[in-house]
Length: 547
Ligand SMILES: *[C@@H]1O[C@H](CO)[C@@H](O)[C@H](O)[C@H]1NC(C)=O
Ligand SMILES: *[C@@H]1O[C@H](CO)[C@@H](O)[C@H](O)[C@H]1NC(C)=O
Image (spheres, rainbow, N blue to C red):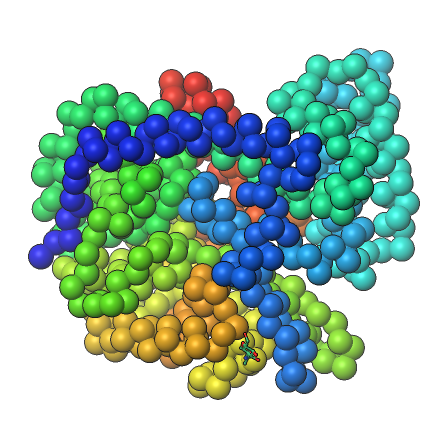
């Protein structure tokens, strides 16, 4: 039996949700402005989110000597994007004030730079700003905590401060970002509290700039879909292909229409043959119609895009653990004691993206399929992926790139006593070959359910944070290591990646919080993503989506 999408009570849904979305889109800017006068809009603020105990955040303090401190922090931006934005910082991290200061300055300087560069008489100054921006980028690519900062860090901050002040003094034509920044800074300069909270606030502002237009796009597409509900026929034509186990099935979990479009387009554009490709795009109810309309209006050579609303699917054999919430790929930032020099007490920060709870539904959603390739929506494919389909995975369930900088032993305190082998490497999501037959054979779903109970009882984690230990433990013995050459990671956080490595990589993974669709995305990596963005269309224009 196929798990079909039930388009249930479409109009009723429309009547309730769309006005809600409209209201929401009006309220966001309003909250934003009003909130500035007393305290910050709580939706954006780390402190407010984290102080509530239902916990999008977990801190584990270890007594074990090999792991003196593990901190797992996640903050999920539920409305926008399909990923978990972990940019909101924990209170305790405000101690790394200088690093944050540098980040804020970098953001501000980037916002002002284009305007300054236009002023003819200020060529010299604009060159200086540019150099300072580069210096900041360089420092930040190496420093995560204040202790990492070079001695001259303070001087850079001072110099940049002066430049920003000077840039602000010009009567320049402001871009949107610049206007917003200036407004916020001027309004709040006197607020003492602001200074302690400034960085995470600015950080978020940057992260929000693009998603606002994404939100607009989503809204427009949804309205258009209901204005013109002529389209469901194509579903029937494709039904046969959707369930045909012989062709290549890709799965993407996403709430972000542009991101998933880029992932699909880049896969198709680089595929030697596109007619045997099916993309199953799994999304939630709120984004379902957006996705429907978008993928009806855009074509990807001969590939088929099948959109499923995961909230409308039902699963017989999951019983009570039928998940009420959706959790797509999750990104975590973990601090571990450096195992090379444990005595030095150096804490290393690593980033890991991993399957969310919804991934554990795969064998039930695709009952007829034997194998799927799961792609995160923050990747860009640069090579033909067809050879992955004939890869012999030696009976393993999950073909994944390993992350041997992190051994399960490093996470011992967090994972508990269930680790089979402390030397096992962690693995990462992004590009995963999932053998559903082997999955069913080993009953990975049952293991998941058992671990799910155990981990939640360990009271170290929120439901979302639980997906880290669960995913790592479930697949501990079932990973087939993919060659590192397949995936280049870090394009959402690491400033130091060279052009050569980028051009050689099969897949670029923008893991990290500087996603390419965000204002705050790392500029030099944006073009690889933009290349596969659809040509401008009316909706994108209306919503100010940059392309
Ligand atoms: C679990 O939480 C309780 C209170 O919330 C605490 O007293 C206890 O120490 C915690 N257990 C562990 C293992 O962290
Ligand atoms: C796919 O990418 C190509 C460029 O490689 C672009 O011209 C095209 O518009 C994109 N198509 C869609 C549907 O995004």
